[in-house]
Length: 78
Image (cartoon, rainbow, N blue to C red; front, side, top):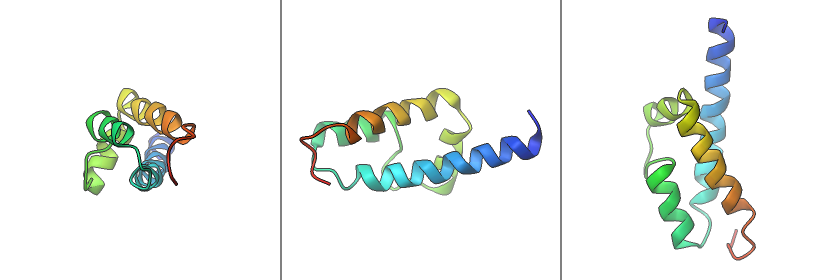
């Protein structure tokens, strides 16, 4: 993959992870929050944390799956 394209893809994922992280922290569901913190983005994530996850397809997709499940849960308070 072209270096510029890979860099742009990583930055897009970093931005998405930050938005997902902010959203997850606003839900009122302890189980979903535990899943996010255990298998998604660590609590008080740094820029390096976001970048590390964004550069790893498996970790990134874990976050996307958890976020999708959370955003579809009608019992969460947003």
